[in-house]
Image 1: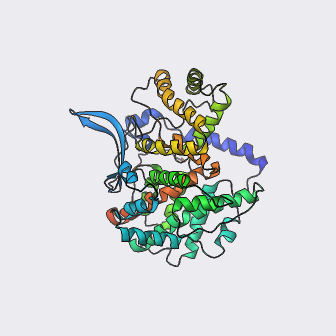
Image 2 (image 1 turned 120 degrees about the vertical axis):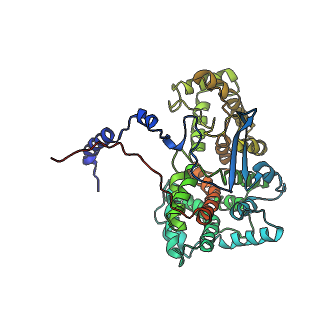
Image 3 (image 1 turned 90 degrees about the vertical axis):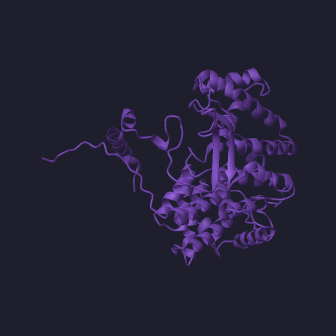
Length: 445
């Protein structure tokens, strides 16, 4: 075990690693290597084919590439159309999950059967909550969930069965169990580490995923229809986002090696928990708290614009020069998920009496593109992404910040599952990219 007295030695080892592992930026350009699998314009390197989803951020007009309002498609349907098709008093997470997994929208009978299956699978092995989740509570709920996922393999007699049918069974089981792993993981931490009351509510097979999350999370089990509807919409919008995001690519890489479902999903979880991927809404919330603390009048647009300028100039907040929640690696003019989500955010803010907070978000949404364009000379377009508002929504739903990335995982497990099955059926070849060695030859003579 590394002791405190050994820290100096470890730090000296770090300096050796830095000296030997640093690669000159010019070499990437010289050998035509795209760092992060993205070219100089931010476009991803083509590494596979998928029939699950599509992201569109530009179109060809008069033989010229032109940016357009972002589009997100699930299995051939625009996500806006799918959400509009869900009744005002209905919840669509399970229906859209079926679409992503199976490739077709379910009939009424198929939807009923799938919902019944999800409800029946929404349970954990006997004493699992006590013996696994509560055994080592952690503030890092993503780590807690990942440990639970790997442990669930020990309870599955067919854990290593490589058939598609078995993997589909395991995926559906995990989709059903993820809300429990997330909420129970937080409740254990909240009790043992924060000395708060302990309560474990069993899920209701008749309730939707969103309703169960809110019910299990709250001491009194109560929630409003608006709260459940907004959370349901958030889960649908975070369910899938192309095959090129880091955690989905991780899913396909690990699947291609022939690894089991539990190990594959644990790897995807490890990717998602990285702050460059799944922690964006947490940074937005931290930034908003900092902005409020430094404004005398949060309705004063001039004051807001001035402070945003300080953030971009690396003089305020975390001094990284980023206005979190603004801009996206793919979208430039607009993020379709944010456009859809905005109306639900407004409805929830009205119900919660949070109109003043919403006004601050909207003012930042209006002013940030101007500030970024002037300070950074970026004119391709900067717009809010879905994470700009998702943290605000979770806050209004009284979801603790420790669960923010876990809520992302509860949704994205569906997309990971769809890509795992597609990789097993459609590719069936191990993913093995090439790295060029620039190592210098040495001799012991």
